[in-house]
Length: 266
Image (cartoon, rainbow, N blue to C red):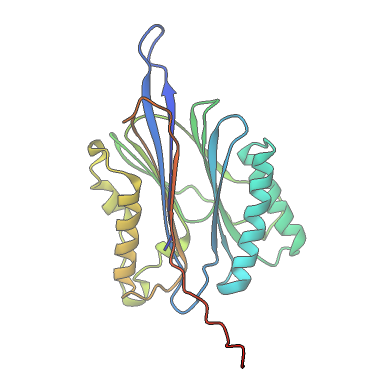
């Protein structure tokens, strides 16, 4: 499992002449490979945007294991490179699709999510080529964005579903790969993610790490500790600022199995 958290401070204009409120942007990630696979076919990367802000790119390569990982790494690298050059998110999603469709001649699919916070526009941007929905939780409730969306790579002229949200306090965005929705499927159970998110205490200001870990824990329970598919969960939260100084932080936690090296005599 990997947990990533990046905190950034942005300013929100309330009214001309009024005091500006400081907001914190927090992002947490939890991911796990399918049981017995050893390596997840999901890849997540983040980059600071040239005009201010940052983007998270999440790709789920078709299949499992090393082949899926190689594919998702390849696509994420291309997306990150384009974002670094200043390309817009929708154009990046289209370009990555065109690359995969040409490179693998329409024979291989992948899902692609780009989650961005753009400081120039003051928007949260979600570009989605993924049949799995994403969720937005705010003081008004939970919204499921489940508009039809196709994976990249299989057909020409595939376009992403693009959603723009204002950067407002007490807003959570949850994106994930489809393995999460399959949790418990083998045992006739359902993760019922919408019900869980509907009960989230938005105004308590809890961090996204708590949400991502709890969702993954529930999924692991449904799969009896043996996940049937790779699962990745990304949670972004906009919360009232806690510090007056603009400090950015990144925290990463990942398991490492020490390799067994052969002895010199062998």
